[in-house]
Amino acid sequence: MSASPEWFVTATPEQEKALFQQSLQWLADKYGADRIITASIHRDETTPHLSAFVVPLTQDKRLSAKEFIGSRDKMRADQTSYAACVANLGLERGIEGSMANHQRIQQHYAAVQRGVEPSVTLLPSSVEPRVLEKASLLERVRGRGDLVEDAEMIAKRVTKDLNKGFAGTVATASTVAQEQRKAREARNTAKGLRKRLETFEGAFRGLTKDQVASVLKMASELQQENAKAKEQSKNKTVTKGKGFSL
Image (cartoon, rainbow, N blue to C red; front, top):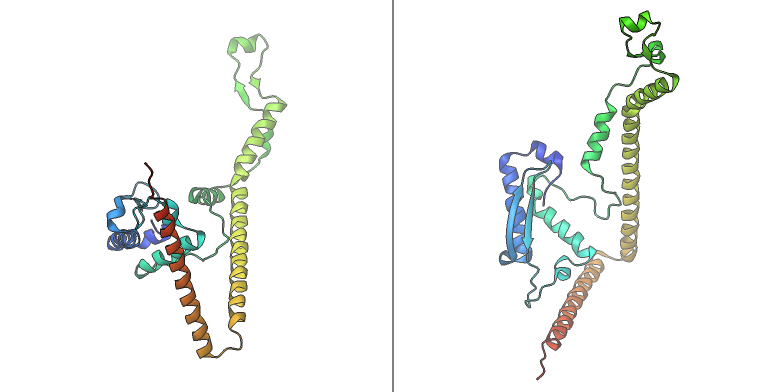
């Protein structure tokens, strides 16, 4: 459990302490304090974070990691709930339903750093043969000259220098491409959210405020009934599984 690297840059020690305390409290409220075996803060990485080991013990004393983690909808709800828990520290939830792809932060900063490296300057002397080994006086007397690069060696050296020099430019272009990709992903996310909103608005179009309230109340009651029925069905399954034979 953590926050973005940017948040830690400006956060005070008190805010960091509050972040981890509130995160631990969120775990206790959600899973139960007795389910938390251990929790520790790691500061030996780029972004400090809290790691916790929680026993997935259900209310009816079963071990069920699947029930603890749940579906994608449940995980999204957990992210929203956790964001609300630490909102007082200036943290906000990421875009729900975002289509962004994860990229390692080391990759991003490495690309930025390479982008500011100076490029290579190709001079006439760069393509001139370089001396690999100077001839001794005795060798010169015997008519032997210095050992110099041949055409293939010159080509390899110049190519290597060019590749190294343009690596920063390529990385900068790559960073621009990354930003364009992020913008495209944000547009796709906004488009998806807009469609969901249009569907939601369409269901209430033409209704009065009181009618909308009635529909929302009915939907809430149906959700509670479904959750209750699901829990009852689960309990029946557990009861059947507790039989024995002689």
